[in-house]
Length: 400
Ligand SMILES: Cc1cc2nc3c(=O)[nH]c(=O)nc-3n(C[C@H](O)[C@H](O)[C@H](O)COP(=O)(O)OP(=O)(O)OC[C@H]3O[C@@H](n4cnc5c(N)ncnc54)[C@H](O)[C@@H]3O)c2cc1C
Image 1 (cartoon, protein in one colour):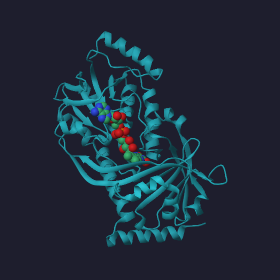
Image 2 (cartoon, rainbow, N blue to C red):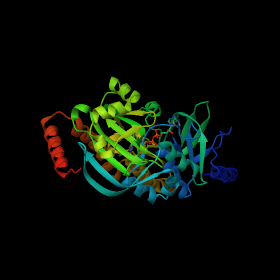
Image 3 (cartoon, helix red, strand yellow):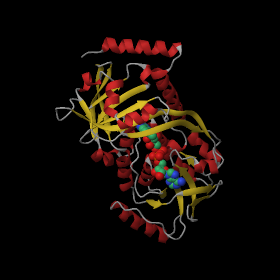
Image 4 (cartoon, rainbow, N blue to C red):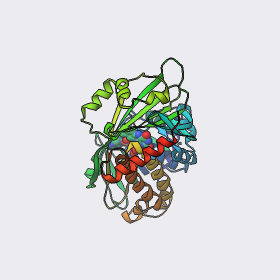
């Protein structure tokens, strides 16, 4: 538990955080009930939810704010519901574009339209909004973790530079980097290297001020393009585009798209402008690739993994944030009971990994990743028939 001096220190940290500041490293070590390693969406959301329950959390990250990375840029329906349940959506809304209606389109035609609640937002804005509004019992500290010595009672977290921190529970939310898991003997099983590639850019209409829609999901016509779909959705003042493709990251196509996105869109999605009107790409192209993996191992005492630290998601499925937020929801229900009893045995922590809602979502995310890929580019007879039936249905529903 925390002594009086530290309680006072948390009070001051709370004041600083309200002003959006991050505390620099202190010279002394700190003991906290919970240390969260990594302040991406997983670590920041969990810390905020635990902080709201009055728990003392130490949130570690090497950076004072999220770097300009290209990751999830859309908050989808299930994610909206969870963020609202956590009371955190309100902090993100000022940075969001609102999508009230989305069109599905294929081969130059819209085949369905419907109301929806979605928000477009840059990933760093999402994370930084949460980091700025942390409850006062969450201390944010700069630090890169190099290793953890864990057991059923107290965990020692070693920082680069030699400092050591201790806690009853460590939550590993360090994203795709696998170094910490490796040092603990946890092996990552790669299910698919280069599962999918994502491109992000801003797009504007030619000749008019605004596109006449909030959002369009445009599916590729032919599997030979190796494109899954292009999604256009509102950021605050602009239209954002995310393109997901199933190619190797070493394919020269990638460089060609980054250099000449407009020409490549016209060539590979030639009928897109029938749906959107004439368009221009008005920004540099952001690029990211994702391997599909999962850390398969027996739970270890004192440590739980959440978000990409445990299992990645195919960006094309839009389920990365579903996984992150479900992990937070389930874990934040488990932790109070864990802290109320002595010890942090692997048996106790397995409650999280075996939770039916978590198990169901993790396996759905893996299955959907594989199905998405197969439906877009699979060559077996089964997937060719499936694709052909779907395209026929979309054509029959389609209208100009
Ligand atoms: C190109 C791309 C597009 C995507 N599109 C979508 C989408 O449309 N919809 C969707 O739902 N999902 C999408 N995803 C997936 C989604 O973005 C991720 O699943 C999600 O961001 C994972 O969050 P995280 O907090 O687990 O990891 P991260 O956001 O990577 O956070 C990890 C944090 O840990 C910190 N860290 C790392 N190592 C250490 C260390 N040693 N010590 C201390 N801190 C450390 C890092 O600095 C970072 O802040 C996309 C991913 C990519 C790559």
